[in-house]
Length: 265
Image 1 (cartoon, rainbow, N blue to C red):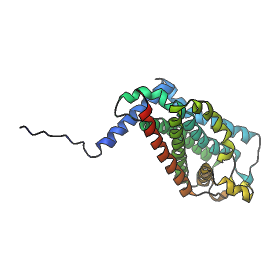
Image 2 (cartoon, rainbow, N blue to C red):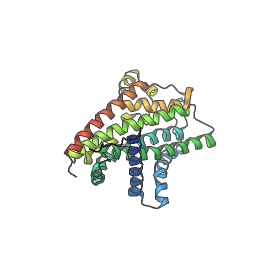
Image 3 (tube, rainbow, N blue to C red):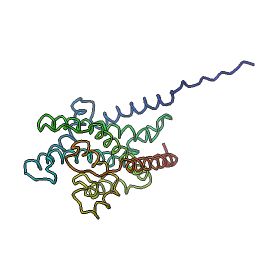
Image 4 (cartoon, helix red, strand yellow):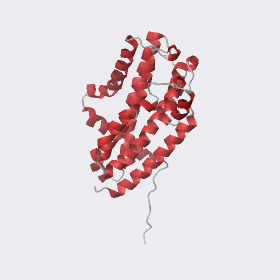
């Protein structure tokens, strides 16, 4: 009898393969959303920058003062751009599975790969816009970030929390269309409590305790701490945000795993 040999996958081979899958899905998402035109790709970065810059400019030139003497342009841009990241990831979640369901014929592609590819693309675009704005703040106003690394961690945690919520919404959208109908509305209705356009120290002490139950409030405070430093007081707990990010992502992955079993491809 001839001996049967089995080829073993090289160490890290499965991980490397999934990274290639996610990379290919990201490029596909770019083409789907913006076409093959390079100017279309550029819009990925221009859109959050244009919206954030417009909001900041309106408040800057209307002369609205802020507690602590903060620059209105920097404050409003620094609030809107991270919120744009959260909103963009969450609002696109209901269409994630229907738009890519045919790809599940390929056994190496999972629902998690699809979600990661879409959300990493969104995160990279918004991070690019934020870096551009930080350069503008420094060049025009002379206000360079006090701790850029802290801002980066805050943005990454914002992406992780949004990704966890998006996976849960994508799971629900497999079973009912209601998520497609209400997600955009809910993101706008919850905007006032996210902490995007106010700071904890502006609130009465009782309201401060209630506000800190919302995980995104901690991230906006962290991002502002990284930018403004000791200019204004900030209140946040990084561990609290990490726990939320971990819990949402674990639940989201479990939901996608269950939803995959009920999909017919």
